[in-house]
Length: 458
Ligand code: ARG
Image (cartoon, rainbow, N blue to C red):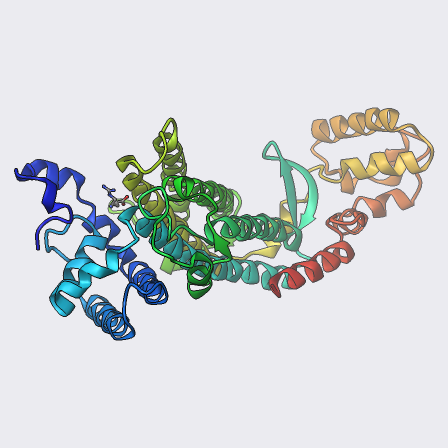
């Protein structure tokens, strides 16, 4: 079969131009979405009186055959077709002859590709949501086991105040929750039908777009045909939300990497997600976590790439738009594989609660609580801060832990200090005192965990 636009041309296309403009190897993965859109269009054409019932039936059956062939194909298609839409049209003509030409009535590749891209992304969003949820489920399950496992909470990477491991893990739960919400919101704008916009201006055939939208499970139609064929803001939205997923996972990956160092020793990673060194026999490297951290660049690169592609494009379709798939597919593949690998990595973690607890000994992460104690004895917080600062200085000079000081010693800094001060310096009590909603006390975390479980129900 020749080009889709043969009639007007007398010369042939330059081979290099063909190679430059072709996208089949890239957009091949849209085949199922394209077939779905084409079948719906065939049904719409029947209703519009363009196809007879028999013709529609022949076309839909042939599209199903093509679907079976393509799903069984083990080698990539190399027919020389320009893109997956031409490839499918070519196959259709082999199966139903001249009838295949009727399917393109009232349709252009412009609305066809926009429809297929949206159908494809809708599927991917569904799968991604399940994968994110699965990581969240692990975080919640693991948090439930560690309400009383304590470790230093850090600010500026310096020991700040103790927190529970449950609280720490749930921080990531909520990041991923917002990611899922962002995708769900983006889906509303993905799930609109461009078909029926044809090349740019709509079509003169009486195609009932609302019915086609229903047929394909869209929430409605794109309201403006020029906009429908030429905007890819839904791709940008996906890549933006996807970038945030990767940013979140990169933070988690960074902590996995740090926690598995001998200096921290908080976790051991399973052999399944680590690699050795060709020269240093002792090495066990967290490469998977490092690659998750490193792949953020792909997402942000695609995000900027897609924004740049759209900037300044005049209405309506321009071939620049074919580039959307480079970015979209790279984004989809990267986000989905990183989410899956993050889960594999997490499921292989062995926690070392005793090492976490040890890290709290003498680390002064209870200093705020001594100041709070003095505040409860009516000392203004700034003065209390000053007093405790002096205590810390003395501990540092003498190499004694804050929690190991005797009451007598503490009283030399302030006569407000009584026997009960020692109690409030124990990390378990420091944590238990943080009872505000969203705080780290076991009681508050239990409430948080309930909310997390609720969020997992939808
Ligand atoms: N393959 C193109 C794309 O992905 C669709 C073809 C539309 N081409 C055209 N010259 N109008 O955007």
